[in-house]
Length: 312
Image 1 (cartoon, rainbow, N blue to C red):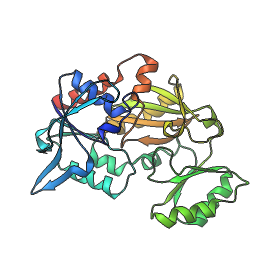
Image 2 (image 1 turned 180 degrees about the vertical axis):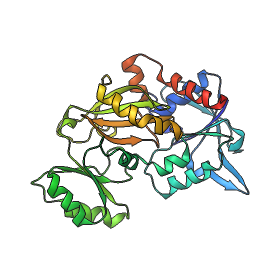
Image 3 (image 1 turned 90 degrees about the vertical axis):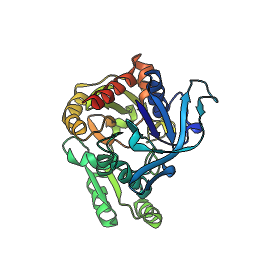
Image 4 (image 1 turned 60 degrees about the horizontal axis):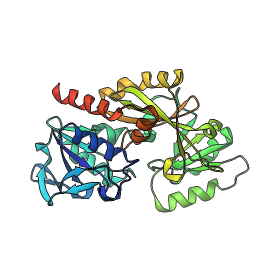
């Protein structure tokens, strides 16, 4: 197949951790041709969805992991698969790319389906499953946030469309900084904030469960660094091997059919203790860590699911 990757700059990726690199590496091993471009080179031109980028060949060699061809313009409708893999923030630039990629379907398979990526961002899709999630509020209004904190005492506050642990704060009952944080966030953004009841189980880890076409295929645990609330690996969280619990499987059984129906082929959910906190559909990570811990080729399963969808 002809496969295009809309992603962050290939020269900057960590080849031992980046999920997009691993996905592209497996595609290459399966005989698919690779084309690479960044989201700022996606365009609409007189009825065509175009990208300016380069053919790409990968190797697992640090500092010399990609050979790129000459820059050229391509019509993305000529490709079998386009991967939507640039990292958030989920802002209007990101949203615009989903509108453009939407125009490729159904002729070209876009993974994950951009219509539902746009409508199901990480911290909003969980609202469809309130019995699986900790108490949650979304608001820009300070009084609403104060009332939630008064009810639940110990809470986590974060930007609704943030990523990688950036801007995540724990507000304990003694903490008097909620108003200051609200002032800071609303001073530079019109986004609401999301606030959730703090889950003490996070000290034992924030589990990333990976689903392929709605089926759980494994998990890694991300343990916060000493003195840190956030477990994201971007901010020092430590990955460790972990199995799937009955509760994990129950959560996946509930959300899996919806993910499959909406074309969310590669998804990473976050589970703290018994609670679902996020459903990551924009640019989930964790594949390489999971493959190392479990000793299985998860990425092959991902491509088998995509190839099956193309053959349908």
